[in-house]
Image (cartoon, rainbow, N blue to C red):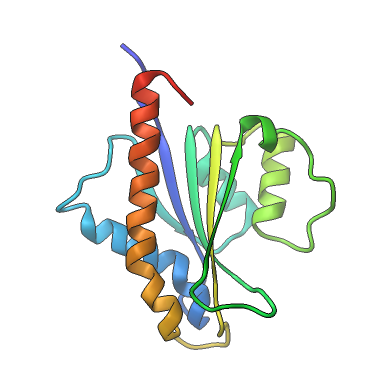
Length: 168
């Protein structure tokens, strides 16, 4: 019998820094919906503050890791979603330029060096407008939660179906 596909969904962020709480909010929405729309066996839903060691631990051994995080773009369009996908071949290559700080970029590079990358990594980065101290998302970022939760669920289903067919 074929081993089950492991899928890790990680919402990165800090709920006490306004729009930076997007990742945990999306994971919470997906978790709420699992009572009506169960996720495939082997799917985990977690949140993380973005510390590289914790991220690596959460996606270690996953065939697919989906990371949802707030992005800071200048100028930006709050609520705009960016999808970035890297497969094992592209993940295994060191980046052409260094990371500008701690976080997802460093986690990917560290995981590459340690041999702990997921098979595929899909990042959904949503442009935010307010990362000051406090709770609550800006209206544009809050409006992205439902559609993004749906998109993440579709990503999981596509991966599960491809794995069942023996594809990537």
